[in-house]
Amino acid sequence: MGTDQAPACEIAGALNSLADRDDFSLILVGDASAIQEELGRHEGFPEDRIEIIHAPERIHPGEPPASAVRRRPDSSIVRGVKLQKAGEADAFISAGSTGAVMAASLILLRPLPGVARPAIGTLLPTAASPTLMLDAGANVDSKPRHLLQFARLGTIYAQDLMGIERPRVGLLNIGEEPEKGDELAVAAYELLAGSDLHFVGNVEGRDIIQGACDVLVCDGFVGNVLLKFYESVAEFIIGLLDQEMDRLGEGVDLREVFRVLDYAEYGGAPLLGVNGVTVICHGSSPPRAIRNAIRVAVQAVESQMVDHIARELSSEDGLR
Image (tube, rainbow, N blue to C red; front, side, top):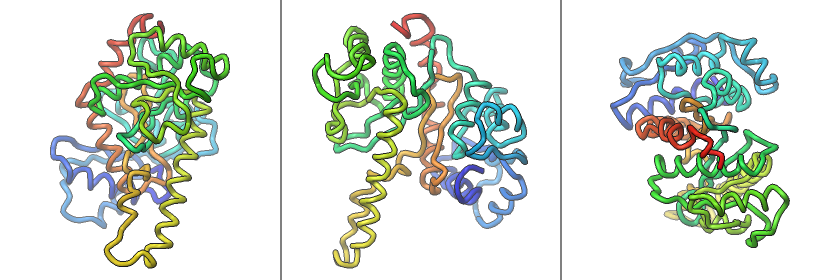
């Protein structure tokens, strides 16, 4: 019930995902009558792979997340996360209030042992393969040890879901030299350089799009600013192409070339470090983004990513 066109986008994306694979099922959580009405507009989908859970309440973007989670136990976000906590679902996906999804996951699923600050990871398109950036907004007052842990969380995600055996970790900074940046960046550099991670050093903003690293670490304030700038550039370029398509002539579809810039291609952003699989989507997500978010969730479950994180960070070594 979270997208701007809910539940139409969620339903379309869900049904498309079911057509991709036949080895998982979906629980649709929200206003049951609205969900059933929207499903009625589609034909030929596997009804036996869909369950509907009625959740009459919604958490709106302007509500304080933590108190809204406690005040609205019958919201689709709280009901959905509780299904995972109870073992009735393996993952939770939502395009609703990011703050509420984070709060519900932290309160109900809890952080994994050894995880100080769960982080949001998001994929940034580059000239090479996508770069996983974290934190993308869950923490805006990080300490150096938190950035080290973000690097560990991102490394595990890159190994399990991106298929990179030894991911290159970069630290977002204003220069390449170890002494560059503020106190947080300098101290984080020392921790990362002394770790067993494949740390490739500081990465400047201009180097991200060249694919300088596989995992990019930064504070959530900086990461959220960078993410929104990235998205605005993509929308700007795609908008210009839409205006110029007629002039470019038949048979030329540069939108396909620039599809890599579209966040919908990557689905959603995982909240890494909680005891479960939570994938956060944009409120403006089209069906393709929902479909890809479901793919990410299925892959996270199949790869046992949460167990992998728990093993790696179950001791104080996770913060070394």
